[in-house]
Length: 317
Image 1 (cartoon, rainbow, N blue to C red):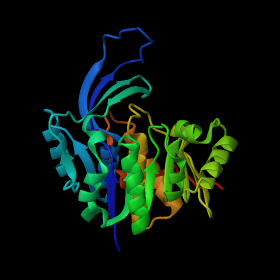
Image 2: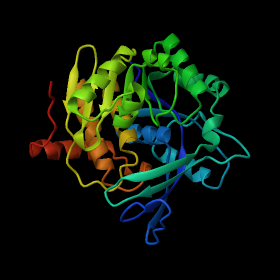
Image 3: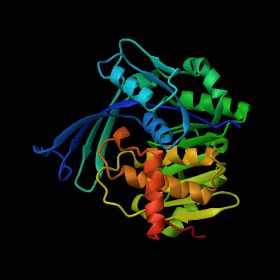
């Protein structure tokens, strides 16, 4: 049985400023702490899945700037299959500027760089590892035409796709029908549905609308409120673990990667959601995107401790 998780997406060099509060427009805050780490939604999800115990390959495009060699070395240390991380010349890898406030909220801007060089031609070059996939994970920090091309390949090869529709921007919604697992937060769900996604009723209505677009399973992540999932057969609401958040930058990415691991292991929907929520909870207590992703040992120990203290979130219907 196949168990390889193939993540197709972005990687970034993250330049982070941590401060007591986020600045107002035109304001300068001069007492921030600086940190340089590696991120990008695709890379975050790949690293998150690998540390959670997954057999993970990463398909990506990087540049030739000074940061890139260390970024690739980090992937090797996390045992990622990076045979199909392609390197372009005369262009920088993706870069992100991140400002993080006192409660872990953030401002974030991204220069895509080499991420937008991940073309259909390079996807064809990566076909040997795509053929090994039990599941494909994608986000929306690579070109739209590449995402569409991967969806078409996955459909022909009967490979399920977990699509994290993030960041939210225009896309041909016909491709939602090719999605096995659609993961969105409240903002992204509102963008796709054209409605507010705040109350419990609005969350469920949004999930129903997204199911009608054709996604087999819809998961709406809700930050401190947990996660809601809807399929043809199941409706599951999992509350979040209570932790002190330091940096929420990659919480959704770690959730996606660890959820895919649980699914490839054959865990139930509820157990997969709890596993992913635990990984995400650990993640937000740490600074930086990839440095914050927990190992499988850490996730299992966290779940054991919270279960002992009767704090594991329970399924609600």
